[in-house]
Amino acid sequence: MPTARADRIASENRPGCQAPAGDRTAWPRGGALLILLSVVDEGLGAVFFGIQPGIMDAFRGRFGVPAEWTPIGAIAIGYPDPASDPVGTPSPSLRKSLDDLVHEGRW
Image (cartoon, rainbow, N blue to C red; front, top):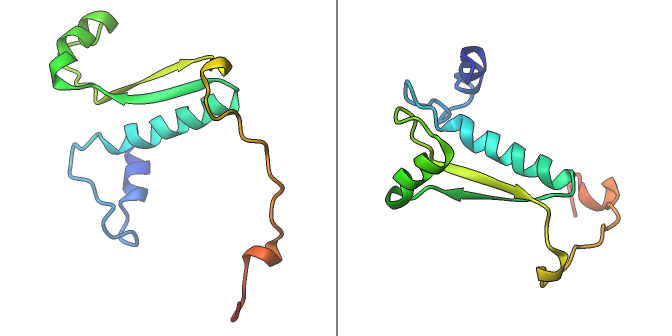
């Protein structure tokens, strides 16, 4: 994560956002979420899955991950199979008006 962004995130007005020095886990979480949302917006399917220690060596070998990197997860991206979707795609709903969502001073 670029230093300026990390400094802004961990600023004094955001207590609890200070990551320990050298902590590189904050970026993958946000990055993974952004990738998943973008993939769905493009009509594809995606899943994030954690890499368990028991399969780390096999994962490194299959995907060429250098020994100095420790992956925490991976994202599989592909076309969804509509035939195997038991729920189906939800139909879009109309947005509620601002008056239905915002109540100033009383309900």
